Length: 206
Image 1 (cartoon, helix red, strand yellow):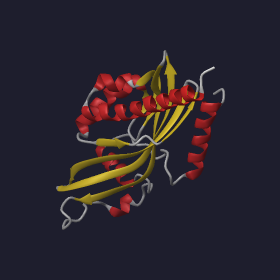
Image 2 (cartoon, rainbow, N blue to C red; image 1 turned 90 degrees about the horizontal axis):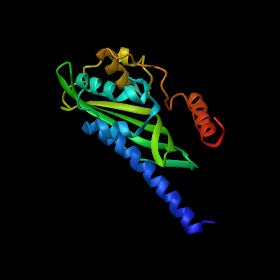
Image 3 (cartoon, one colour; image 1 turned 60 degrees about the vertical axis):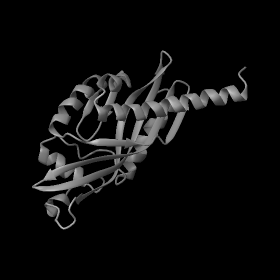
């Protein structure tokens, strides 16, 4: 039987490997390290973001094409809650998506506050991401020059969900097929059902 210390060390190693995986995937995405990014996902992984809903194999080339249209977007991720059960784990991480763009001649910064949720599975003694979901909290936009007004149609903006309204406004203008049914703190019942499904996967047979 392993000692208590050995059990704790093994649990700490699992958590550290999972946190490192989460940080590495977003860093590799932002820096264009595509082979490293691809190695973070299982081949049957499922990814859902504001602009993509599909498998891990297609996600990397799709990201490369997306960055040709919207260059410069970056991500910060801070792995938070890690729950491990054998060879399965869930990790939920506070995150920030940010970019600087020109909108109708005005330079603007926008930031999206969110959480990243992933199922993680160990296969052949290696942890990789099995899912990648974004849970939206809120977003903000400001003109770089505070003397300039934001070139926003405020009546149109008000039609979008409060958790990612500036992102939705921009993505619609860019012609992306944006989902308006994404996970967000403004829909607590849907979020509760999502987390119940995640816990069922981790601790149940599903």
